[in-house]
Image (cartoon, rainbow, N blue to C red; front, side):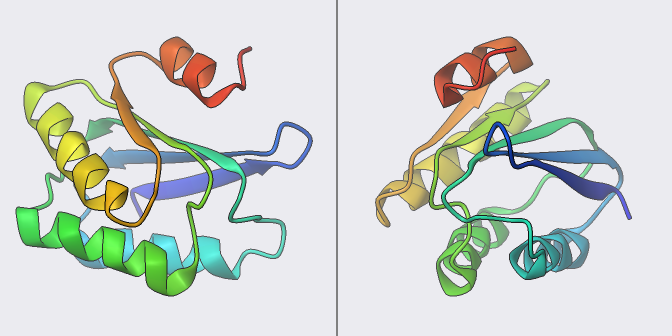
Length: 123
């Protein structure tokens, strides 16, 4: 599976990483898996690094991701998305706009350091 996560309970930080092809169903299953993870707290800050991910969700899939966040009760804390391409940046901004309607804080970055700084989890 091209999606994986780690949870740092001390820093209250979830790190999601996407690499390779991936697809909508795999992304959804990852979200469900994270929601089931007993060490996950929905209020933790989250860093999603998708720089090496080849999958670019459609507008409807992006909207569905936000709906699923609400259904599963995940990503209630800030979510920083680290991207490498203009297309990824645009998709991240779409996700941010959809998330704002639920009161979520989602921001897009081109570097991990800036994302961690915004999340309040530097170094």
